[in-house]
Length: 272
Ligand SMILES: O=C(O)CCC(=O)C(=O)O
Image (cartoon, rainbow, N blue to C red; front, side, top):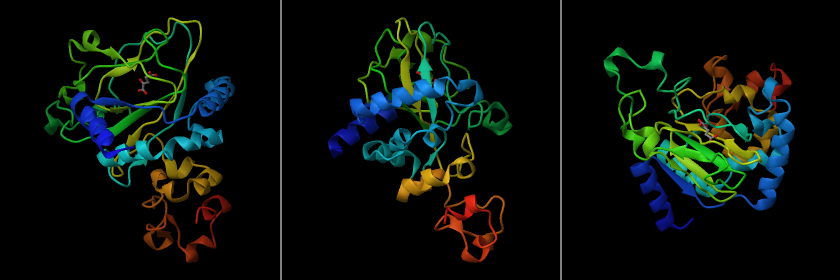
């Protein structure tokens, strides 16, 4: 991505609370991802659509695409963490659920995490998390494309702005592109009025020092981690030491110390 384009996307994110990056996935990659989502959809009642980087290698690509990582790290720091990766198959007739802001269940907008001293104000001065939506289908005004309310990331109160629904725009976007938005921005799927499902991957990111939706270091498969190469830090392993003492964990490498590794079960040891 050229520097001038990068600056334009950054500015749009700062001012509007969202931007849309041009196609970063090929048609073949989108086809393969949709096929995998169809398979996983059948397992949805048992978590089939959660943590999908563990379930098909095509999804591992989504956190290794440089233009997106550059934007994520610009706002969240070089050690930004992957917070989740969900598959989304929006069926005909679905998507009428209205708008919401993220971070309400596990993030900084969680009602029980807002302190009395915050006086009912959300944290809007800095970007604490970004959500990304990979458009595996073309997103159109008819097929359930995400809608977002421009500028609503700056709204201080925790409740939806009164005019958010009227001001929301539908993010029409080509196949393979990615919508990137501040988690404070009100958004939601629009209604899928077509006869075909709308396919997407929902891929939120957070600051290293906030809590993610999943304990990634615990749930990521060893093979996925190995293939991630130097991007393994997005799973938070460089700082992980929740169940061990400091002598047992090398925070720099994100691996058990050799002394400790000898006594570990294989799943943990293989991360080293
Ligand atoms: O599926 C969509 O278009 C929106 C997804 C969404 O609301 C979310 O990821 O929080």
